[in-house]
Image (spheres, rainbow, N blue to C red):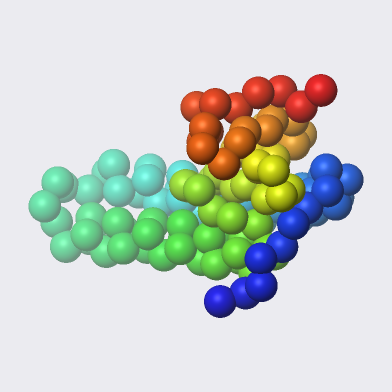
Length: 113
């Protein structure tokens, strides 16, 4: 397991461009597969294959995010641990503008002042 990383707001914001770029690519791939899946019969082998590919896209994205040192909290949702809580970003937000404590989670996000 990688060593725990702590982020300042500046270092987290500096990485956000790369995170947004990689996330945009993964979201585009997943949305394309979701459109393809919608055209298939509910129980078809093709649909099952597409669902596997969707999971692979999300898994690949999560591994990329973890390799950058951020914590993946859900599809297209990452947290930057700052030592007293998390700076929190979710696609398609343009900026890193929210914070939540360790206990509150996404529902407890507040704007960064």
